[in-house]
Length: 415
Image (cartoon, rainbow, N blue to C red):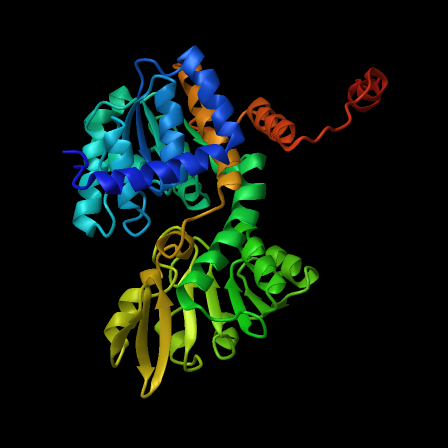
């Protein structure tokens, strides 16, 4: 069954949060108006698994305004906000999520969403797509296609496509310019430090910050740490990204060396086992660890829990683990996404662009039902440009346009 409204005041709180997002998301607001008139999702069932907080909730309401029948769950048990879930359920959407769900409950929520013959899949990390291809294969016949929000999810999709296992087209939303250039860099950069600062109440200036991974998200985290006055070190496995980090002014070194000197550690790689127990045993007393990658595998939490001499719930979302006699390392948000487990996620104006890409990509899939032969779909350039042009309009910014002569100069075929 979907979410039960146990406390009307809880739902009211969520409604206020969603309204605040609506007021600060001009792109989604304009799409809501368009969709209400056009009804592009009339008769379409949408399954959505994204971190269930106010910005995601507003995306759900925008799709519902366009006629979609929404089936909603979270993509991380510690990022679901119960008041927001209650507000969506009160509004008539089908919601299967609550904060702090166990692994079994989380899987049940995903299954409950997918057992409704859904046509469009909006995923964040690939859990919906994975279950459709492994446990609920009978539901595949109803799927038109889907959209993937994250780098991690696209890595999983590419592996499935290369193995010829992906059964329906997926739009790689994360790879759109209006998503990764802003969401991954500026959104992650700000929201990670919002979560760290809110949770620890410690100063960053003068500290040593180690950022593991220098993709777009890592770039944002490192840039913001530098802006807060930290000395930033980067660890990488990609030689090209390592050179980028050096030329951006950061020191690059292996994690085995960085572990000995860091005060704050942030993993942003999408890979497993980035910080191991052996690394943690060499860390300073009081080192703070957190993860900004999608899954809670970048810091070896299972190994840490097994190896720790003792542990202490230091304060909300901070657990200390004794890794050597008298030496504690502190993990934020149980090693889950720190910007959501310990904060409210990306700023509304950033997610406005990302979710506009999501909404328009879902519309594109419906409009091109049965016409897409590729399994991995690049976000159409016209969608990227539509979002960018709308954003500039709402920012009150005008830009130049190519003259006819300039277009001929740039694009005319050579004779």
